[in-house]
Length: 68
Image 1 (cartoon, rainbow, N blue to C red):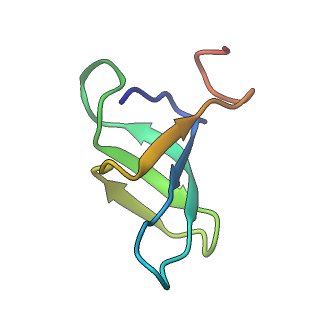
Image 2: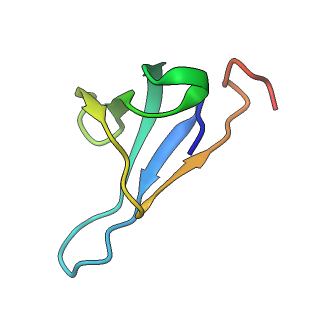
């Protein structure tokens, strides 16, 4: 997994009763875009350190610093 600041992190839970989570990557702490990421969650604006699992994916945005 690879991200840059401004990308979106989306976590799609496979367990019943769990909602999808969506947040903005505000800081990349791993080498060369690897996790962990500091993420600002859209649902409540809280910021947390995330080590994404297999149910997570990165969505590129126009606001990402890489620009693609």
